[in-house]
Length: 367
Image (tube, rainbow, N blue to C red; front, side, top):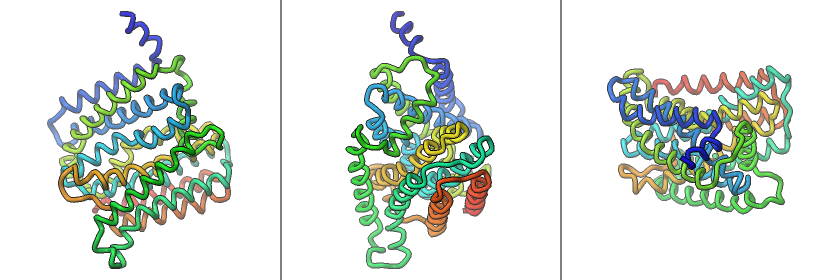
């Protein structure tokens, strides 16, 4: 009874709502098994809610570990639901879904979410202004990360001698990207440096959750993170099982499913945070939150899938993406760099970014 009373003082109203919905839809994903669309919709909502619970658990660790350490944890754990979905999709042979989801997550943040942030923020505050130097630094890291991830694809397209060794080259690339991530950890942990991108995201998310009166104890935050991770693994299996019937019922391709549906479901929480920050006229923080997710995907998620694929079963997963995926993510990255390099943006630029995303998504509707 004492423990329950203590928890009632720790949990806020939004915590209870999130926990209740996550538990309901997680159980629902096991119960709702008939039909072509119902199991898919229930499991997709469950994945999104569990992603929110993972994010909230990581946020509460900030009170004990500091923003820098939480930034590292966010980079490592923030994409747990999407990682589990990708693992089960690879086991099911849906390689195109996984490849499209990786590129789709990057483009959804660069075009759709950043565009929405500019539209919403500019509609309320006029022209949004942010640090041009900071924006160029963030996009510089983004371009380098994405370019490194695409090297195996380029080697395959130009028929270089390395083109016949896609598996080995992908694994070398994965190791390099993970090393870069590890090298960024000491800088993230140092409190005397200017806040890093991951720290900005962690602090911004924490401030948006300021309505909670009491921080979770360390044991509770770790327990909730573990439970959310286990729940995400369970629901992800259901989500992938329901994905193929849903694609057939909706007559959509694997490429579109990964590029749009899986990508948005796995990053919905970060997306909402970025848009809300822009509404509050905090453009610098919005940029950090929105762009932190694709950096995590390029530096952590994609490399982990490459190295873990031999243990998953099925064909090895490589970083050789379809030419259309490479071209669109390259265009998106360069377009965003150009638009934000002057340190300001408005609703028209945001609308153009959203329009480009819609066109890209439409181009993959058929495959």
